[in-house]
Image 1 (cartoon, rainbow, N blue to C red):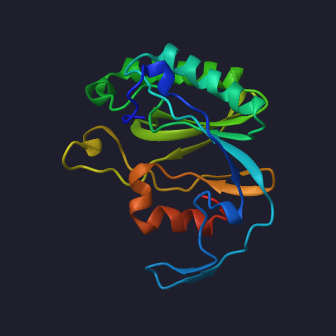
Image 2 (cartoon, rainbow, N blue to C red; image 1 turned 120 degrees about the horizontal axis):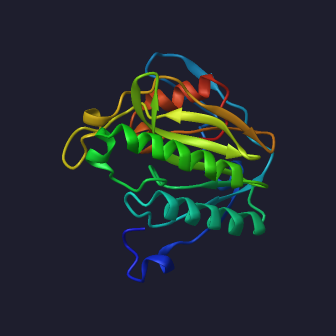
Length: 212
């Protein structure tokens, strides 16, 4: 929430949106064609559910503070009837972490903070952005927390590497979609630059996603 002129704690908000075809929570069009020439006919949603967006300022490197803030907003969203809460890219560690991403201990600390946050997440699903080290590679990730556990993880595909962005210095490219079900709706995740290119969205569509 970089445009907010108030104190940081006053910038955060939890707008609650109604997700469904009529409300456009970034839904894929009913009929669309990918650059591979493949036509895709998508079913129009008839189910609705509430999702919330945590528009928060995360402090770079303050894992405990950021996790506490995410947990606080998750509870607020739950009390307002939301079933899903979205948080910012790399929200767990703050953005941009830059050379902190060169430290092994930073990934380990983020993993511990994510698992601790997952254990506290009940009654609502929460998508948390964080760095992830897996099988010797490092990723810009978004993870779904639900019912006290890590339920799914998406790895960012498109890594911008120009102007203020230098993500290829730190991260590897993800290649798989991540699709999960909430209230009978099939959701998929993309992170920032992923929506600037058609590939990640169409991979999600092919994997059965209805809402991106």
